[in-house]
Image (cartoon, rainbow, N blue to C red; front, side, top):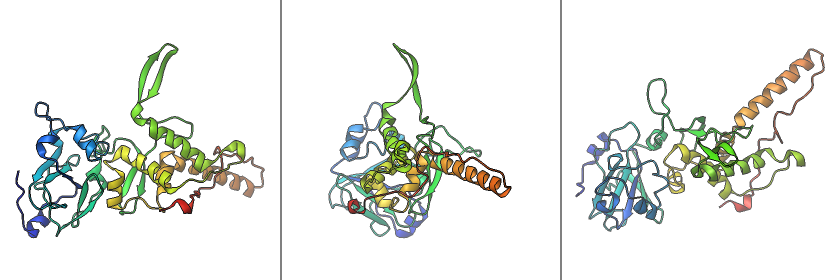
Length: 304
């Protein structure tokens, strides 16, 4: 397919808010299996897109075309964009530097529309949750958190204060009986939230002590949570400017249901204050299994 140059006026009429990926050296015929129309996971993995586009599986869910001339690198390659949930396919796809910004991330280039910024809805993964008006919701419910792009992103609750999870589990019959088991897909993020509990709440047995972590750990934790609901990679999060030293903690806290913990603490403090005002003694209860200090300790020397 040859991509034709359209005018900037035409560009402003046709909205293209999903990110565009340029895969240098790839061609459209490599992206799809001819018999099944399924996307080649091998090709996506080669260009670092397999995990970000894990829920995008068929030819009908993407827009792809070959570039044989002008491109971000000046060489031939493939332009690829995943269709947003509940929206029609883009009317056109091309390399238009006058209305796009492009950045080289090594394995692929990422292009963003200057006039129609990417929103959370453009990156939402497929799921079964729907709102009252019938529109699709992110797969896993949680807390809305405003990121540096100005939009609110729904951060899934992965680990509750009682150690349970909202993540899907499989029913397994083992030799020691039937039990629920977390899918291998979610094991890494589940383990990471266990570390987050220790980081934010400390070890109650040690008086709420808190270890120091670096920003690489903090960013990875926040990205892992967001990526459950959105087609995000570290590269795309960087291009969109989502995570900062000022907001990663809110994302991580939402993942371990800390807003619920803070609300419980506030209720207890209000109850104690009311009892004291009435002149009756009130026992104080520590509703959190550790320190209630919500400020995180990050090693500044580890920040890049």
